[in-house]
Image (cartoon, rainbow, N blue to C red; front, top):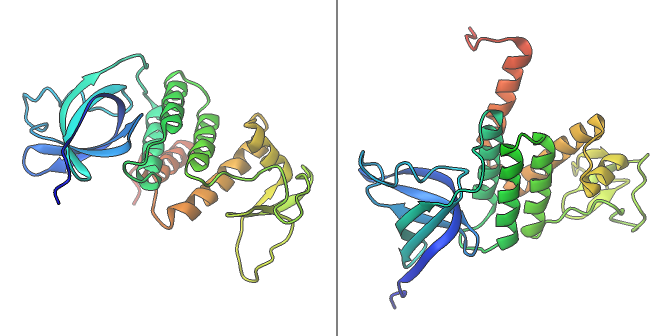
Length: 252
């Protein structure tokens, strides 16, 4: 039985990624407020005179209209909504990192209206020259929570006792902080109680906690990514290493 064709008009959206499709078209992976992540064919968008070429840009608030049945729909119209400053400089790489997380963790057509708002807020912070690391940590926490992987941070997994800021804990990905590993051979990241509480309060003012929170979130996300690589993370790391060493990029 054929699926009925759907029509959606003027849906708030952001472009997460585009890639070529056939000779003149592209496929657009978009995050929408009401329908989650959707895949759309933008027919003729690679032609020089296509009106879509300048509109389908990442990090810009858009209104998208589409129609079709099945997982891959046809883009009918795209308009720029405005209202968000341009993301530039190093914040661009942070934005691409957020997009990669959404592409690799968020199933298609799984609506998360609050996550859409959280993404828009994170872009606003990055565009407004806010500190990048806290903006990324906040979004990572909200993304995991929306997907059903909320991080227990304030109480021990085995006893329910409040986390002691002076203790060091093993962080069991699916259970939370533990003072000891119950499963022989299992590897969990270690983290200070103070860092767990800072994450819970989204307070990244202490440099040691901020650095440790970054390492913990990387390991937690890698666990749920199941070996899928975040390319933008490696790019940021390489650029930072070049800046620290004064490397001109001409390695032998």
